[in-house]
Length: 456
Ligand SMILES: Cc1cc2nc3c(=O)[nH]c(=O)nc-3n(C[C@H](O)[C@H](O)[C@H](O)COP(=O)(O)OP(=O)(O)OC[C@H]3O[C@@H](n4cnc5c(N)ncnc54)[C@H](O)[C@@H]3O)c2cc1C
Image (cartoon, rainbow, N blue to C red; front, side, top):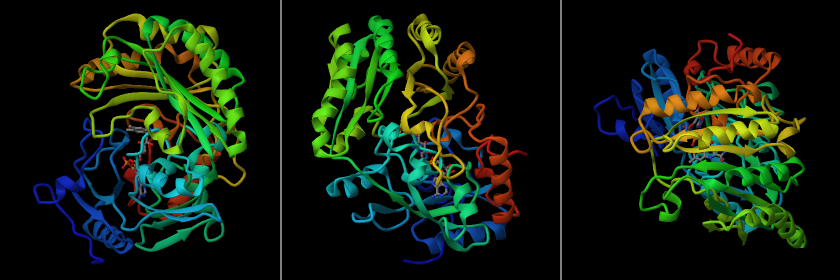
């Protein structure tokens, strides 16, 4: 394979493919774009961008295209690095080429009785998710996904390919893990895996009229829920499309989904009892419209959240909530119940706590999350409402929940680069700035820095 990068300008064949994004509501239009399949092509692209006076931007799937700043002065490097996921079962390690989707990582690691800290969708790129924190349905057990990263192969602004770990460059290794981006183009990551023998996973849906009692039961359960369980609750207005069962698109529904894991086969009976502690009281509220929760194999975790398999337009908001108590839950319900039909497809709370709350002594810039729930909203412009209607509803929700807003965000959940974001404290911001100054003195990657990830 040639080590030369093939650069496409707008209008040239190849430009559209290189700029493909999963989020169809956030098209990207860089000055030029390339698809990199080897580290050599990445190095060539970085050098060509610098020579042409362009910045460098990075993307794999474009799931986070809405969170990306405009790219008109940049060369976009789409990472589709050749190679497969290499698993070392004895060391519980996986080496993942940049551009690999989580679905492919799961396929590679599960035959070894191991799990990776992936999120709800197999279509998300492993590298972008990991660098931005990563909230996994195993996360209350295994912590923020970024803590699993043990080494990063990175092409920096000088065009050099470096293997960065806690020995070769501990400061850069610290910064790249959750520091907010702008350090270079990652060509591969090495992550630590963890043993999982089986799961109880799925999603249950009820008509929204049961929302109040369901939320009360779920909230009471979350107060001292076991770390083996990671769940979410969403109020959803699902569109009437063939992929959605008609009983779920007949009106607003409440969905409670997630995972309860068994670390070893011997833990399976305990796991099933823990799942019953969660599901029993919920099922007693009312019979679900659909209930797919069941003991099953690990790959099913990627189906539990029912994320769209193909590119869709979406637009939303996110922030971390503290303990919402009865008042916050009441406000949440009042807002999601208030007016129908809603322009939002989903308004949700992802359960935090457990291992998410513990700083990792070996971790990077972001290694834990303070807060009780990751709040998120999402609408589909053109399908569930106009862009303006969706933005207005997101702003109303943000306003009304301000009392419980911790003022922080999880970078992988941020959907809009214009929204307030903050995930690092002041000393950490000063350190990531210092690392960027050292590693990228001319600011070649400055456009890739997430807003709120710099003290400047
Ligand atoms: C359907 C769906 C489900 C999701 N589920 C979850 C979930 O369960 N938990 C969760 O935490 N998040 C979830 N997300 C959010 C997702 O983790 C983020 O959007 C993540 O940033 C996507 O990474 P990507 O590489 O696929 O996306 P991209 O948009 O391609 O990349 C996002 C950013 O990552 C950086 N990046 C990507 N590749 C590289 C590279 N090779 N080198 C350097 N930087 C790079 C760049 O800054 C880029 O702008 C979900 C999103 C969607 C749309």
